[in-house]
Image 1 (cartoon, helix red, strand yellow):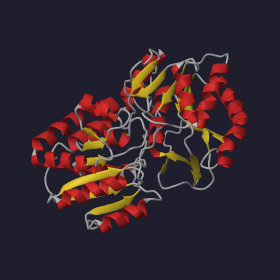
Image 2 (cartoon, helix red, strand yellow):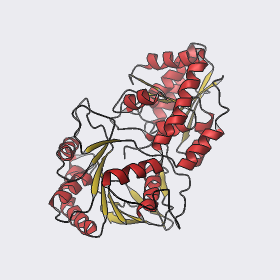
Image 3 (cartoon, one colour):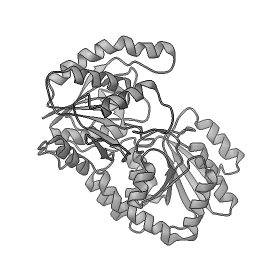
Image 4 (cartoon, helix red, strand yellow):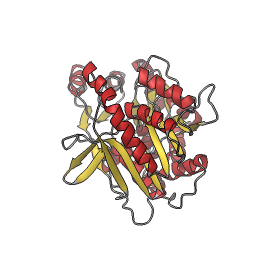
Length: 403
C-alpha cells in the first residue's frame, strides 16, 4: 500500500542522506512500516539544513521534491501564487500512483492540495491532518482560515484529524493526538524513571524554539521568580533560534545565569536524558499550535508539564490529569504552581504517574490503529516499522513544530 503525504516540511540533502524536521521524520518512518511505503511530496531546500533536521531511517520513504516558496515579504508571498500551478500538476500526478493520501495543513501547499483533491476524479482514501488550532481565539492568516473552512465543509472529500474537541465539530472531523514515541520507547521510559521523586535542586526543562512566542523568556523569568522565593532550582533550555542571545542576557540580568543552561538543539537520544532527569517541563507558549509533542514526550519520562493554556493543551492535560495548563503570559501563576508542587510532592507524583499512563495515547501504534479505523483500512504493518525497515535513530525533537 502506497501512502502519499503532501506537506510543507522542509527537506535537505547532506552527505547523500535525505533529512527533514525530526518529529516528522520519526512519524513517517513508522507510517512507512504500516503502509508499506511513503511518498512525501514536499519542498527540497538548498544547503545541508539546520541542526534540527535528521535523516530518514526507514528506506521506504521517497521524496518528490517541490520548489520552495512562501515566506516573509510581499515578493515571497507572491512566489506561492507563481508556484501553485506546478504544485497542482505534481500533486495530481502523485495522487494517481497513491493508494492513500494524507494532506498536512495548515500550509500553502496544503491549500493547493485540498483544491487538487476536490477536483480529482479518482477516489483514493484521503485524510487531512490539521495540526494547528482548529478554533483559534484570535486572527490568523487568510490561508489558514480558508483551509479550515474548506476542510470543515469536507470539500477535500475525506476525514479531518484535529487536536482537541470543539463546539459544533462535524462527524467527519475526528479528534486525534499527535504521536511522538513507539510503544517500546514508552515502556522503556516508564521503567527507567520509576525511581524519580521531586527533590532539590528542582530541575526545570524548556524544550522548543528559543523565542518569545514559545515562552523561552517567560521560562527564564519563572526560574528567577523561584530562586527569589528561595526555591533551589535550575533550568535547562533545549532548542535554538535567533532570539536566543536576548534570553541569555535576560538570565544574566536576572542574576540566574549560573542556573540557566542553554544547550542548543539536541538529538532525540540526548534529549531523553534531559527528560529523564527533569521534574517539570515549562512551556508557557502563546503560539497557536495544536498539541506540542514535547509535552507528551515529557509525560512518558515522568516529567510533569506546565504549559500555556492555548489550543487543545488545556483539554488534554485536564482529561489526562498529567499536568497543568496556565495563562501563558502569567509568569507569577507558573511560579505559584511550581511552588505548590514543591510544597506538596505527592501532588507532583500523582501528575507524573498520570503522565506515564497517558503516554500510551501518543504512541505510533495507537495512532496507526486509529487511522486504520477511520479510513476503513487493513494495515498488516500497523504494529510498528514493519519487516525489513530500519528503526529510526534519535531525532532532533527539540522544538517540535506544528506538523
